Length: 425
Image 1 (cartoon, rainbow, N blue to C red):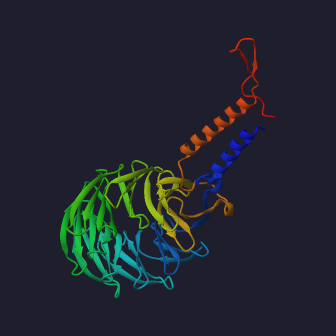
Image 2 (tube, rainbow, N blue to C red):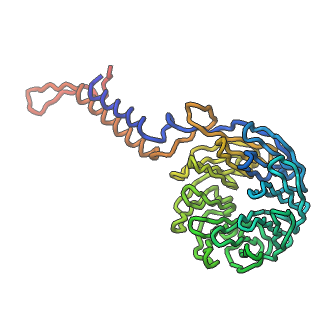
Image 3 (spheres, rainbow, N blue to C red):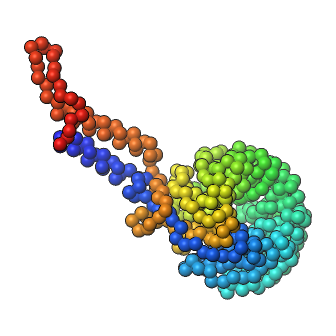
């Protein structure tokens, strides 16, 4: 082989090995276990204190407890009817489960996974949030337009706060000590003071206000408006809307990524994730995912984001480094919840339609087999491809020039050439 051709091929090989994001250095994602749980699992949460994963089985009035060490069910705890949402109280080690069908909150001990209390609340309890400053838990009661305040020390209701119509989401603002409640029926956010449990402000947001999230980096509160395809941004310093950001269709869930300070919005109706910069509150990326983007979980150490796609029975795995999809993994039917365990590096997906939890494992290609092989963050594939094509063209041209003899005829401009693209052998 011509020396220049060999040199060019060598350069191509070096470039391919050096460019990050090639399949040879890829990470792999796979379903490493499928755990059978109760009927219609709806929510899932990790207790970092004991390493267990708690699954609210809405169809069987039960919470399944999965060990993060063995990925097996170690306990089944009977709770109220239609368990809906799970919250944690790290101060007392309790796991709090709202039961939408029995208007109660079940309290499970994280030390022995036993039921230790059942607390009556308002009608249709939905989400629950812990306030570490006062040790209380706040429960939005969808049907009674109220918030029940539960003392974490006594597990009793210490206040009932009237808010807007149909409260669905609750979030705590660690900067000002207030609790923000999004009211889907009145398109407002009620601000409840954590010091006296009274409403101190009511803020009008977009149509179909659905979910809410706090950004501790900038002190703002983000509200997804399901029917107006926007996110309202509220300043925690003055409790007023400071921006309204257009996102995808039917924004459903909003999560803050502490690794990069951005806000990730799952757009249920447009198969996408909108990424809002926490610095300037503008959309900086739109990532296409599966149908019915629903829930989000973060692996902040590795810069990985998991998104459940409810209608396509998949989970999208996204790199937060460049906001691109690394893999799409098939899971169970109707995945509705996801939680990440930093202790074992696995993600847990609750499958509402198949009564299972899919355990997703991610790791280097050399140490793990997989059904999906994502590219690690790196240069775009089309840029690498363009460079390789150019180098191959140079190699062919150089080889052709070197292997083409020229014989002059009697005229000074007459040249006889061999056919192009000679056999390199």
